[in-house]
Length: 394
Ligand SMILES: *Cc1c(COP(=O)(O)O)cnc(C)c1O
Image 1: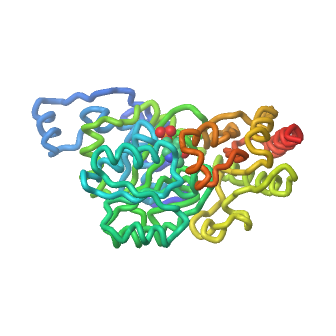
Image 2: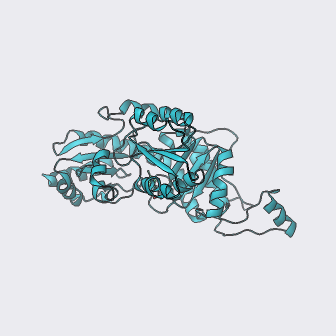
Image 3: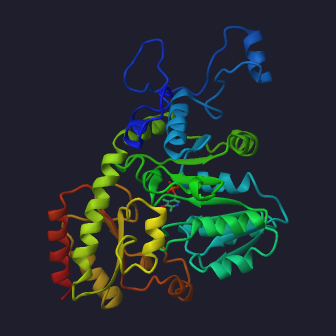
């Protein structure tokens, strides 16, 4: 590609492809740990950085490179490094940049393992960690009065779909000397491009919509070439969170259909949110593009669609939520998301069970909350399944 700049759906199919001497049409799977040199001189020149040659798949691999180039193209980022998991991406993006004595400010509503890195891991290394309510700009401003090295945020957040004003937080963060890392898993690069709102680094779990079919784990870090090559790359080369070429190949093929899949899931999610909203058994529905979402205007300013997840609260707390989940016939109970198969989870007893009840209450994750990752089934079948399960709630 690279002759012209193409639209996202095209970019996801063609960007970054490297063809070998065999002129294969599909991306080749270079399932090799190492590479060979024509001569001792070539090996020496490669290690001196004088010639560009693959050395070892912990440093780089052609299949992984194709994925990295494709992700950089869809994100509009200068560079990308793929990692073994989404958490490896978050961990590497933070630890490569931080040192003892630094300060990190993060939104409170983070994916559980991201919360653990900030709250538990970073303080072990003498890095101060401060959490703020992501929707409260005054809290961000107060926290960012002090010099800060890094800001981490997730928008929309898991599972309450809170929206954070990225441009406002980025301005505050930059004034405090911080880089801003955005976990963009829920929106995908198709619905939201944080770099356009001032973010410095974007991280993904490629396990979710990028694979999109529940097969492999993967992650990615995207940002400026200078930071990726001089700050992130030495960290990942030497600590080893490399993505398997096999997983990169699966995710490359996943990306080819991501625009279709995400568009369909968004259409279904919006229809399902509207369908659930009026139901007597339901206390409230959260979907970023519904007018009753508290930050609908901000969501529309930052995202092109409302996303593939719907969160709702059943009346009757955990008992009602469990009766509902156990009555589902089509939608599966799973803590995963971003899959062609529709999945629901009860955050209070699974993904967020390790958070103290008082802290869960602050996040709004009550006992009746259910997170619905809307897949690719016919939306009428999904609605029939929901209606059947709602009847069981009584
Ligand atoms: C899943 C997820 C992660 C972690 O990704 P893994 O691939 O499971 O390691 C991080 N952030 C968010 C928002 C996620 O949904």
